[in-house]
Image 1 (cartoon, one colour):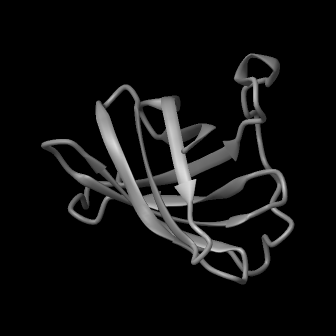
Image 2: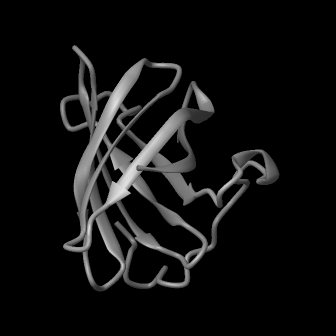
Length: 123
């Protein structure tokens, strides 16, 4: 599994960084991974499609799930997340994920990604 950097934003929480994030993208596009953030430990499962779009399910251990839909910008993955079970206004926001080169200490935090495929990944 490769190390990644990432964040998500939610009204009331602001931008929250994901820690110890690792993802494995198989040759067939299947994605598996795990990490931790201010909510708790989670797993990622999903699929990278050939058009550059990605769908992931983030499952917090013993808690709720979050649906991530985005696209590859060339620098990383940018998109929106949704908690389907919530309907009170704080159930969606933005996210970004970026693979880290060999030494994560040499990389800065993701500030913003401007997706090259923005026209096709307005989710």
